[in-house]
Amino acid sequence: MNKMIFIPSLIAAIAMLFSSCSPPREGGAGETQKSDEDLEGLFARAAEIVQRGDPALFEKMAKNKQDYVMRLAGVRRLDNPTLLAEIAQKDKEESVRIAAIERLHDQTLLAKIAKNDYNTDVRRAAVHRLDDQTLLSEIALNHECKFTRFDAVSKLKDQIILADIAQNEKENSLRNAAVNRLEDFALLADIAKHEKEAWIQHTARVRISVFCREIVEFVEKLDDQTLLAEYTKHGEDEVREKAVSKLNDQKLLAEIVKNDKEVKVRRMAAYRIDDQNVLAEVARSDDHCWVRCPATQKLHDPVILAELAKNDVNDEVRRTAVKKFDDQTLLMEIAVNDAEGHVRHDAVMRIKDLTF
Image (cartoon, rainbow, N blue to C red):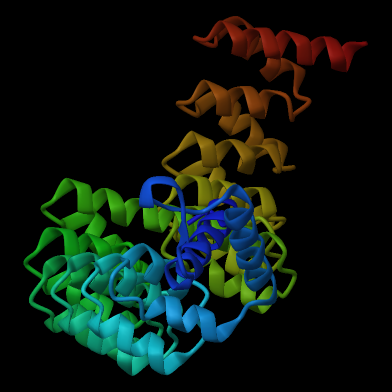
């Protein structure tokens, strides 16, 4: 409850309690009345008690059997763990039991309530107060109510149990809740690929995406070359690409540019490589122009550049090569004969640059 609403309500409840304990004042025609001054005095006294926080009065309010609203107001200010435990288990009103649960810390007692209370909302309140992973695991795996199990799964951190639920649970909502707590990239990738329920697949993909962003941000701040080398083996393309963008190890970069399955990772490696032999191999043989272009851009060998300018099947690679060599005879040939107009144009512009 909002504090601004709760405090006036509490003052009113205390005033009612005093009013019920005060002798009535006889009015006209035998009726019982309280003057405005009486009510004002009751509320002033109630406000004073709220301000100083009188434990005895709050306990009295929490035990009031006739008025659950008064019990609720008292419980919300109560600090007596023994009385709170009793109310959390025995009060007939769900809202009062929940208010007591929200002030409890005893994990064993909270687990007992989460397992045994007949009301779903009360069990949920108890689960939300639980932090003990062993107790949460027991509820997540064994409780008869799927809603209570869902609440427990949503607070689990134990990756082994979450993996078991994500892979083997029959209830879709529980599998999805477990997937949403997983941190195992390999398992998330497997679920994203093979899970039959599309919405659970989507949860796995979103989970992977969230972790990727966090890891990419972490790698962005790394300078340790050993750690960066480890992240070049990561299962997610974005993470490998970011690690490669900061890597200096030429031998490892050569392995990545030749063997990584993802084009953008190989492309980044090509930008980082200085070895002319490796660049020549990549420029000639990689099956994607996005990788061949940066390799060509970093080449110095005029013979290989001329070969690429004449023979590469991709016009962007030929354009890149044309801008890198000085053989005007070959440039003239390309300016006349290349099939793509922008390659011919670049050859003409290169001749002009070399001439003037």
